[in-house]
Amino acid sequence: MRHFAGAAAHAGTLEHLRVAHLTDLHVGRVTPFKVQQAAVQLTNAAKPDLIAITGDFVCHSQLYLDQLTEVVRGFEAPVVCVLGNHDYWSGATEVQRALARAGAAVLMNQNTTIEVRGQRLQLVGLDDAYTGHADRAAAIRGLDPKLPMLGLSHIAEEADGLWAAGVPLVLSGHTHAGQVTLARLHELAIGKMAGHRYVHGLYGARASGGAVYVGAGVGASVMPLRVGERGRREITVFELGKQPGTIPEHHQEQPPGPGRKPSPRVQYERAAKVVARERRRARRGERS
Image (cartoon, rainbow, N blue to C red; front, side, top):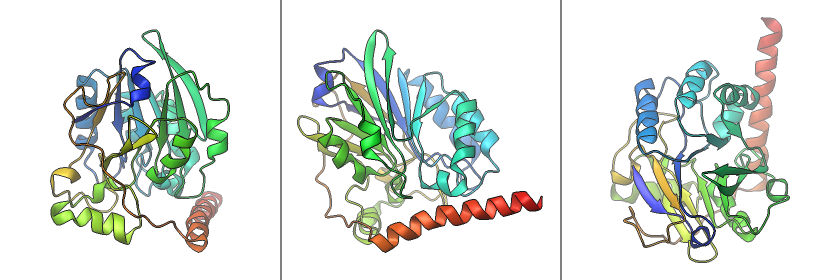
């Protein structure tokens, strides 16, 4: 469990809202189901007003969608989420239906306004940028600049564009914090080799401009190995309405790495992978 205050902009417009952030559940055979259940129990014990989950609900498969529904249904607070690359690889429509059965709201390049304890909060959900589904213009359309905002994006690098639209804090995932954080291996593998500007934790400036938080995630997509304090499975609680620096926090804001944008060819290959998998599933369905 990690704790942080919200952005300074929230302090002027919200009295106090507690948001629990989870990401990369990866419900499936790689991550034991008891880990998912423990995440639900810990989250509920924190008594959040809202739960935000930033993508990668499954792991390469639709075989565990019933378990996904069971996990998300176990949360006691309202759940709002966005999809990640694994959800598109596995079948975004089916994952979205599983989440809807659990009562979760899925934002796909959309924003919505919720009211909790008499306070209104705008949620901006950006669809998965890794597979080419993000549309920032659609996601921010109709935002009320007078109301507080919170952004959700599976890929943290999309936060820069949301800051420009007035969203002061963005929650994200995808990197798993590298899973192995000894000797700064996560910064080497996820930062320098994979080209991410934001690897794990809090980046930017909550007092002005904007900040993004990259969660370490709950599940794993390849192997469940996690080594190092920063790589531990994680639930993060944000106290929106609290000024930064007024509560004990896990770590301070960090400067981003240099980053490296994916080339047009890489972007095309990522999008094509989703289409290829959709076609394979369609052919299997026709044969069966």
